[in-house]
Length: 366
Image (cartoon, rainbow, N blue to C red; front, side):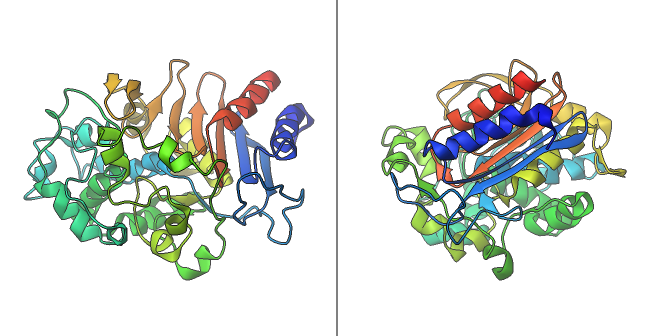
């Protein structure tokens, strides 16, 4: 790591020294070059309040450690569908039903990608094991009535996003979204990330743990609210007993179960920031990247209960940066004005103050 970015390294190490972090990775590209690639702590689950040995005990976090990054995966799922848009196989303003016969909600592909389709929650209560039943959950969505007129307002499609986007990919291309990602994006750009892990890759995963045992309840929202319905059906998505197990890791739940390294995520955004090309391999046209990162919706978000800017798959910030944070603290984005991309992947489920401090340190170096 270049000495210029020593404050970033020091801030990363301080998180562990203060007991605020137990296992994580941080990667930064600046001006088209990787400049920070840090890992620390342990892959093992750590009970709230426990002290983590500095070297991660006998199960240290390694450069190839995978971790569930929750909604950080939404832009990755969106890019699979946008690949088909770029190739002329899908039209952004065509109705979803043009590709998915029997889909009742009169939403367009663009509205699905920008969280305005009106389907932020699965409509039929299902048990936790339904996370592995792709066909069932997609059938539920196809038959659903929208919560609002598509395009009129936004609400983060917390769980449903990946099934809406992924089923469109499958209907048009024939491949499941996990295989499409592996063959069309992750493979060509050499990205260590996936939807639906095999047995071997599951052995590389870090186990998630809570900084505070009350975290699942604190993040749910009011009982019966749209946020609660969006996050808790099927149940268990914030229960470490489920998400640390093979059912969750092997399933394709693209809205919330991308498993990735921070290095892969920062590299992905570096390719997008360069206009869709990485190491001489062009995956996306400049025009597609420009449209995908343009604000499509600016207004209230009924699930987040706050104002939001949505692009085609990403959140957008007033400083011009675009990307996505995941519930629990992981995050990845590009900052075109400052010329960097950053990814933070953590197994410690808590707020985003850790990555905020890391980025403050990064900005001090630029």
